[in-house]
Length: 433
Image (cartoon, rainbow, N blue to C red; front, top):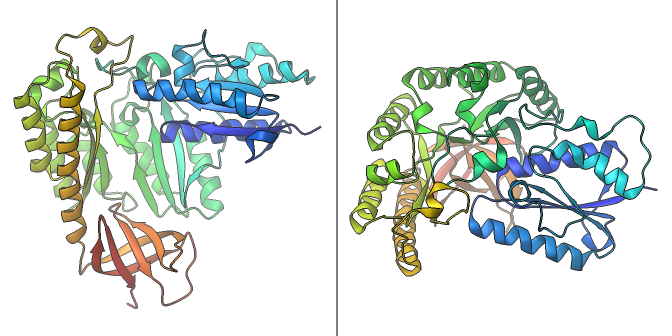
């Protein structure tokens, strides 16, 4: 009998990658993925814990699974369950450090006999659990996880507790997966992890280890674009930026995690940089990549944040000129230092500050799109829209709507003459040059 398994994923790219990895391992055991949760024998929820809302939604999804698929074995895994194992109500609960236990536990629950694997295979959370080559993609971009865990312990963040300390994937496994995906026709690779710049930190390496890895990835046949996940400003040394500059496949789009544009707030957050460091990194990247796009995350309403500190954040965002800012109201996480900090910000004030910063982000994003009018850009096509136009992203990670005058298909890379804008996107036609 082939058991049917349904997957639901909350949270980040790393979670999505790990869901695909578990799906691959279950497929190797004879399980069949289904898109209908009602008919599933197994219902897997990959949870998130990055905010209080993510925690709440994770609990809600577990309860919902029991209602939608009352006869299924409900599995809860991931960051939320790493922190809250005792009150989930799922049939099987695994976190992030014992995720390899899922398959033997599931087989035990379903009474599947297997003499080759047992529960002694558990990963202790001190090494990178290798899934093998995972065919996970985000539209036409292949996503590759190279690292897990974080050692920074920012005062607001639960991730070091839910994911554990830094542990890196072997270079051999990373390069093998990319060769496999390139052989299947993928041309853009998104390199992701919980703390990318800490790749091989547990081996005593600094961020230049990431630069070396990216150079090795760029030498693989078929790799035409390399896009990086979130990067810590303190790790972006002039030496690393110089390495990135010399790799032609590196996309000139960098997501630098800022969190606040106020030095006093950054200090309370236990971030490892100040606005001066961030300003230097932004300048170095603009020098190395003249048309670079910079995106970031920022938190509004951190404990003790004054009106002056909020205005400093807004002014700094404008100064840097981000392409986009992911703005979040502060969400207290039990178990972090910020949970007990004085100076909690009223919810109405948080919402007002969040709206103001999002408005600034929208202004910058529209301005950035306008800068591309009249330019010729390289676009990786992702999907055809209902009106017949195509959607894709240029190397600078601007959404491009392409009017076709020839046969196009997903995964093609075409040159596009940009003629106008639409909200935060640009519009153009395929270049004949």
